[in-house]
Length: 138
Length: 79
Image 1 (tube, rainbow over the protein chains, first blue to last red):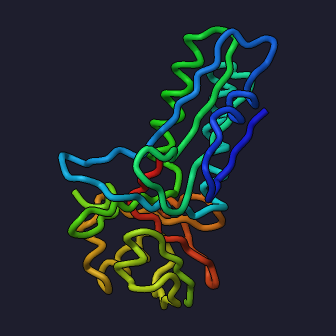
Image 2 (cartoon, rainbow over the protein chains, first blue to last red; image 1 turned 90 degrees about the vertical axis):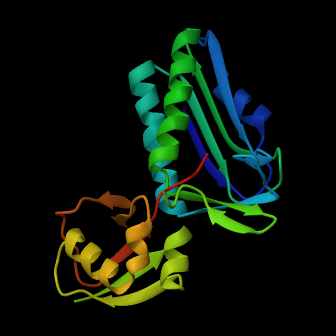
């Protein structure tokens, strides 16, 4: 099964881990992406995420389907936050269960790397002296 | 032909609004890119700009239809 969500409230790691739990799973890897307090030494006050939601859901589902196919993942949950986030808040959770642990690690790595390339979600960092859309400019 | 553009992230800042009606003389994504960048040179400074229709990325040689809603997708930064 696949569970894809974009939420404007606190993400739930326990929910994602439970969702992917299965009797044939030998391993579950849960990646939790959190808001860091600085970017290249510059203190970050907060973040804002916005999503083009209908397409973001579809792109996240494509990632989950690819994982099921390539790594024989049993269940996959991908939840992404939108709205305003403070330091240490959870921005993204990716949970994957597979029969053997190696595949779960690899699948999780693939999922977060691909999400950062393809899913139409944008992050804005707020500093003391201004705000920046992350990765927009060289 | 007339199309509708919907902008997110820094693209919205560049065109200074979320949606605009855009008069496109060509018919491909590439034509749209040229016309858009000519009108808003700030787009040249971005790391990338992609376009989507019906929730799917469109390649440069793909066609845009009249009345399409084209989503402007500047460099994504989720996760």
